[in-house]
Length: 204
Image (tube, rainbow, N blue to C red; front, side, top):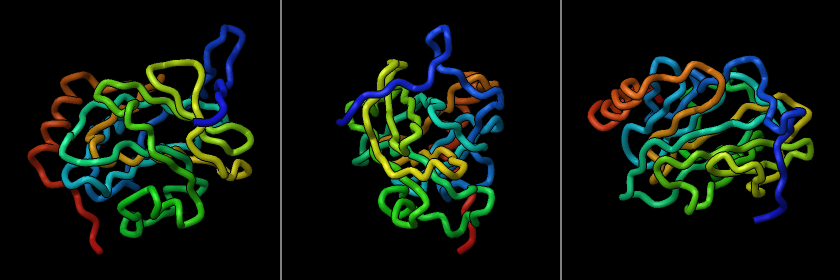
C-alpha cells in the first residue's frame, strides 16, 4: 500500500513522544460518541456513523498516535478511519461536524483521512499512525516499527490534530500513550453504557 517509513526515533531506537499528555478532545465529537472521564476511551453509542473524535492538542510531525480497538460490532460494514486536520477543533461548532470523515470531512478541504485496512481492524489490534514532513500519513499495527502509506496531502505548515472516526464495525477505541489511562473497570463501564444509553445529541 505504498512506501514504508519509520516514525522519528531517538538514540535508543524508540519514538520520542512530546511531554504533553494526549487525550481525545472533550468537546468536539460526533453526536453518537461517548467518552470516559479521562477522555482516553471513546465509544459509538448507536448506528454506524457520527463517531468522529479529535486529539486534545496538536500532533507533531512523526509523532505516533496509538489506539487499541476495544470492541467490534460485526453487523456493520467498514471500519476505523484515521488522519489529520489543520483546523483547530476548539474553533468548530459540534453541530456542523459531518457524520463521516471520509468523504465528508475530507471534502471540506482541511483534513486528510483514510480507511484502516480491514485486516487490521480486529478487536484488540493496536493501530498507530503519524504524518511525515511531506504531508504523508502512515499507519502501523501491533507496535511494528515500519508503516504503510494511508494518505497524503496533509498541510504540514499548520498545526495538526489527529482525527479518529469510530465507524462501522469499529465500536470503541482506547488512546494509548504516556497519559494516565483508565482502568479496565472504567473501560467496561463505558462499553456497557454505549450498549444501553442514548448519547448526548447536539441540537440541529
